[in-house]
Image 1 (cartoon, rainbow, N blue to C red):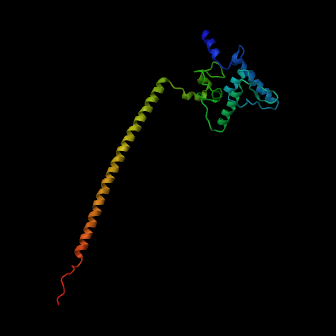
Image 2: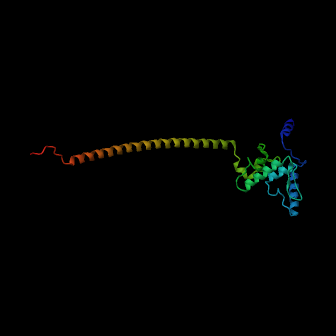
Image 3: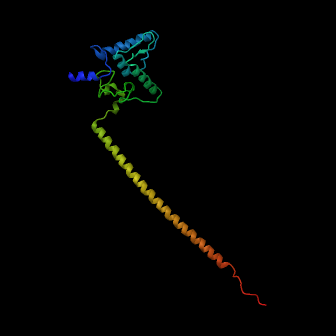
Length: 210
């Protein structure tokens, strides 16, 4: 009891649900949207993610019956603006939300409570985010993944070292071939000069006979 009271004090936003909680409130919110649609008005919340929609409604927000706009109120105005921004990113394909960071989490600027799903009450993440069920892994699975990641990292380091060693060996072999080629070219040049000198006729420097 005391712990729950302390947790309540730390909350920035407080929901306003009756004794039936989300179980009875959600059908009422759905009925409200349907009534507005029947008036020929599209509720602003119609295409919101359900979790975000129900969170706002559970915290006292409602829909203007004349315009279909969600009435945020001063306290939740910034949250609403951030939600619209996040939805724009999703619709444009710029950002892909997941159970760890979705539109509502972005709007609230806080991480979700561990294991629970905001906007649905006492619903686990697994049931609140059925599309993300494949991402739920046991501790053993995470350990195995971490071991595999380290193994791959070690393999990459070993491959990098081997590649560096081979590169040094290739560079050394190339340098040796270049030195041998230089020596060969020098020898050829010297031999050519020697042959040219030997083939030239001698010059007679004796004085002429009178």
